[in-house]
Amino acid sequence: MLGYRLKSWKKLDAMCKVKSVDQFLKIVFEKIFEANKKKDDDPFNLFWFRGESCYYNETSLVPSAYRDLVVKNNAAIKEKKYSVTGKDHTFSYVEQNIRADFDRRALPYILSKNIESTAWNRYFLMQHYNVNTRLLDWTEDAIKALFFAVKIEAVKENTEDTKDADAKVWILQPFELNHFTFNKLSDYKFQNYLIPPLSNDNDKPQNLLYEDKTIRLIELTRRYLIMDSEEVKSKDYYPLAIYPPFLDERMAAQKACFTIFGNKCDGLREVIKLQNSLSPKIIDSIVIDGKSKKKIRSQLRLIGIDDSSIYPDLDGLGNALKSKYKGEYKNIEISDEKW
Image 1 (tube, rainbow, N blue to C red):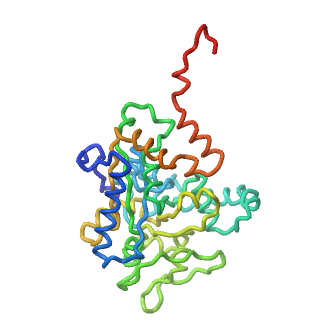
Image 2: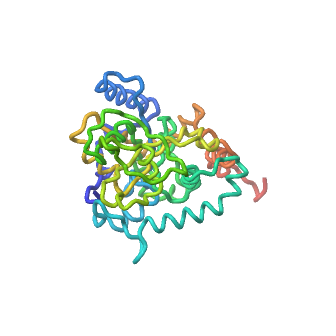
Image 3: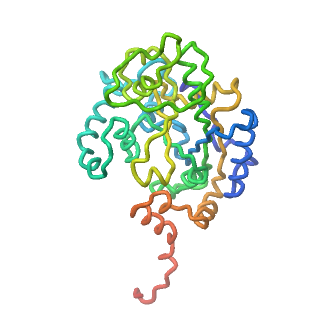
């Protein structure tokens, strides 16, 4: 629920804040070891990571399509209710219009890249190219998540109130999240821990549950993509962890994975509130010391992690060079306004 607010990062205990890459990795390994210990050292247990700068403070762990709603409505968004974006327009109505517009205009790009034009692929591309969606980015690479956490956001980088603000890397156990979500949708107590397969475009709507109360996984992912069923409005569809196909070099380089949100705008933050009674934790976090972000960026660059490795294209190369040589022109001595 939106009435639940995360503590301000500025109030977190300074002793817990990470100040270097090696300290970050040490804490990551400790948290993974502790989580695996509670699962009998399961070698197949998964951990996903998400880096967030301080600019996400009010909308931390909220996908882009829901951030304005969270900020605007705050505690007014109730459980089991679609949020209103206009006088007569539901969220679902607005999203359908955006998707239809994207599908029409992105088709030449999709064809030129030999990408299969499926509804899921188009939705992943929307997220990947900054269209607001219900998807939240994660990565299987902890170091890349750290890069995103300390990466400078050019528009706001020089503001005094955010320059040294803390960042955060979230740690998600996707199997645990899906197990939690499955059990919220059915009275059947699931024993399996899995990431469901994605639906196909020609899949027809069905009942969500089989006669034995287990979930039709293809129908589940179809509903999360389309959100078109009346039943969606009467059940709590918490975030679901899913794997996308790697549609381009960026997604592969970033080891991209997603959580897709259903009708719970603040779903992951509510999971944090509820998980106090759960074991092991579904979501954990590591706080990055704001005053150490510049040093950590330098350490990451030394081990080959910069924009060009995260974004393997000319945009990434350009941003990497810009960051590497930032401030060099200011150090040039000019005599008589000449070189």
